[in-house]
Image (tube, rainbow over all chains, first blue to last red):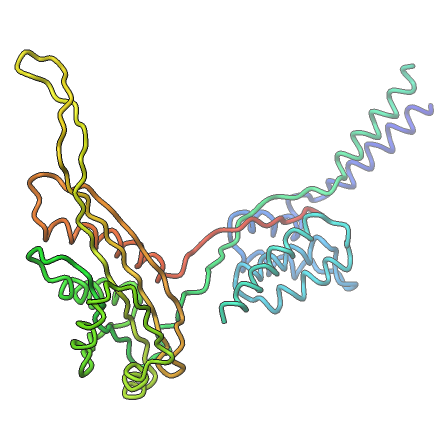
Length: 110
Length: 225
């Protein structure tokens, strides 16, 4: 009985994680981003934004897209939000460090 | 035993399924160009101080051609040859010192005057040195019987060094300065003009690369939910 409950819970949890995996705006935007279609990806991520502001992943991904389009001020804002929401994320930190390095190089050259 | 393994396995599968996943993507990153050529009214080329042995070619002319044609293309702005008054005499004097004198453009009265006469302009100038050295080398040849033998030969070694400066006239500031060097052992049938042009072409290729903003790709991570 115990086993069945555990297994049912597991299956339900997995199912919850995988709901609309490729259909949701967020996942679709990630796919677009992998193809380099940044404008479209931004549009989808904006649609996926929840009223409370969205997840760290969403803000990180928006930041990457904005950076690749040269919209650096907006990218910096998004990175800041992402880091605030997930300060321990190594990936977000790595993205932000590289972004800041580029900004510093530009500033030095000016 | 079995009852313990099942929940553990289940938990492992669950954590793997819900772990933060990420994908590596590349974003374009364009490094800043060494100068914004479009912001200047004119881009000038002032003939280089050359230390080149007399071998039947005109180094100054070749440099002028390179800057007005190839560098114009790389910079995206027409480079006009400028021959300021007295520059030929000054160049002649500087050549005597075998290019060991470095011109301080900020403090040079001559250059200050040139810069003032051409406001909102960029200036390419510099120096070019060519050495034709003779070297003894041992080459493996075969005699009439087909046996290998070593023969001592004298060959030429051409060494070119070019120092290019890009100066903002209004501030008299050197925006960018780079020294390029190339060497080659010319073939027995090549002319001095060909050898000179070959070396200059190699340096020009490096120079044009430096003048164009580099486009690179950088890695970023996009995260799954």
